[in-house]
Amino acid sequence: MQTRKIPHPGWNLEYLMFLFTRLSGLAFFLLAIIGVMAALLMGARYQMDLGTLMRWTFFPNPNHVLDSDIPDVTFGWDNGFWQIMQFLIIFFGGTHGLNGLRVVLEDYVHRPFWQIVIKLLIFVLWIFMILVAVFVVLGS
Amino acid sequence: MKVTLKIFRYNPETDKKPHYDRFVVEAEATDRILDLLESIKNYQDGTLSYRRSCAHGICGSDAMRINGVNRLACKALVKDVGNKVTVEPILGLPVEKDLIVDMEPFFDHYRSVMPYFVGGEENPKKEQMQSPEDRERFDDTTKCILCAACTTSCPSFWASGEYIGPSAMVNAHRFIFDSRDQAAAERLKILNDQYGVYRCHTIFNCTDACPREIQITKAIGELKKAIVTARLD
Ligand code: SF4
Ligand code: FES
Image 1 (cartoon, helix red, strand yellow):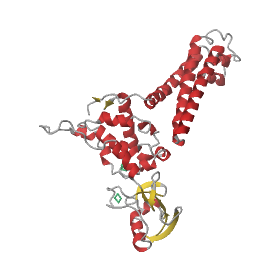
Image 2 (image 1 turned 90 degrees about the vertical axis):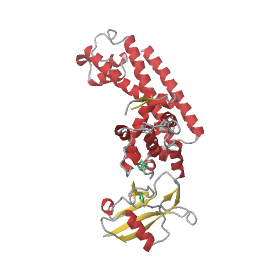
Image 3 (image 1 turned 135 degrees about the vertical axis):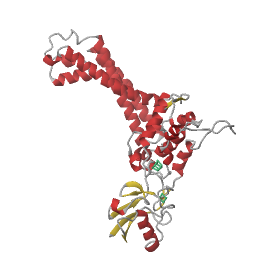
């Protein structure tokens, strides 16, 4: 069958979150790979144990490498690039997870009133998480 | 051999709540569960109620839960299910009596996806041709017999009867991917909803349950892709 174009079926929250879930899942892999590769290139093999390397991979915060054998954390580890990486990881991971929670809860909560309450709660939790993330990323 | 059947019973006129009845039937390994139900109804308990029509797996009226799995009673053989058989109505639809459920909510979802051919101009001068390849594109989903085994095996449907369910999507797929049909966009708009394709969490129960072996989860995946890309291929 030849490919046929059709008018876009319309944008809505479900559509956007469906796309976001798939893209953020991929982004999470990409960010983790960048984290672990960069750490290894910066000499992590000789300077940190596996646990520290994993903590760096999934949340590249300089606090995670302070106690390792890295001689100068400010060099390479503690800079704006990794701050952006930290924020992206929290944003993609947290939003992906909380949206998943929203979808799952819709399976169990059917009363419209409670659906609104729970969605609101998840939204507040999400904003709170983003604020804490900004605080942690900028404050470390 | 002797087969023991434990059958879900409920008569809303006399019963406060459902119960199970046991029947023992003499059967061959190659008998169908429908044959056993017929034997019980004819010789042991005439009040036993269930739907059946063709008895050949094509009308879709006798989907029921046989040992916990949605199957057509007319396609399930004794040798495949053993000599202790539990028979219950399909889940997620209100029970009317014994193994009979109210199919209306199921058919409402079916009707909501415009399950009919929408052609182009009226009285066209020429025949509307379709190549064998184009016909092949939606062949799998033409096989649906609307038995509801898929939709009533789906946890998302159990969770919310508002979910349109796999069967309605199979029937939407049948027309959306038909190269001659003109209403694909309209149907995809209906499915692009909180209770449309997005309630499908790729659990695959539907694919396992389908007596016609339709690749339902794959078909739903194709609908999701068509919605996201605004293309049919
Ligand atoms: S897709 Fe299969 S299981 Fe679902 S209603 Fe059609 S025939 Fe029955
Ligand atoms: S009786 Fe027709 S499908 Fe089983």
